[in-house]
Length: 253
Image (tube, rainbow, N blue to C red; front, side, top):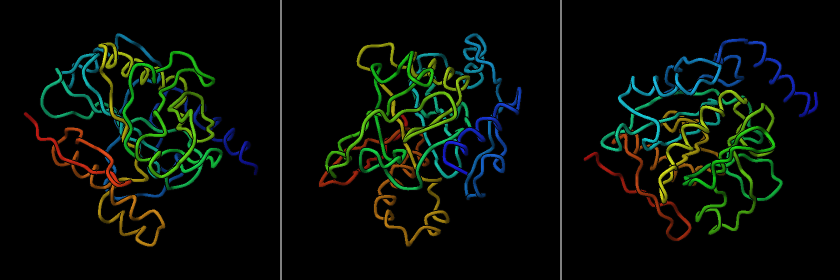
């Protein structure tokens, strides 16, 4: 089966699920991994009023600060929200990723078909009402780390549809909701949101599975950011020094 045929097959499978929005892990085609959370159920049909109402279940509102966390192996995207812009972030949704291209490991050059891994910060200009695949959220690749390593590429997105060439495809209904969340979070000038993209949930058991990977040293840097957020539920401060991510945990006020 060609790559295009595989992508079309996945798209047909998702559409055949009808009103269901959450793919069982078996249907998503990924093996069981350590530390995976329970998926959060929500309506497949985008509804702005329902979104605002659902946010109130975690005492949050549209426009509150958000963090997106992407997990390749699990094919999941988490949306975390900081209610009222204070204190710890709370998990709002776990969205199924319909498709991504490439394999575990970062994007390093234009045309390698890899989906990005790393720590990215997006602003209002990265949130697109229209794109080739419905709506889109631009990672802002390459970031400072990528540039320090000479990595190349552009237009790395979270977008609609269920096909991808180096991006994360969410289907149109789900990217509609992500668009609404991210657009609201960047309405105030100068504000933005983090996108943390991981190869898998970075528990020690999962790290041990890949201890012979060429990317292990890089993934250990990502794990430091993963662990910092898991500990405080606030996105850590992240900078790049000597071509490495340097992570400082941020405590809740």
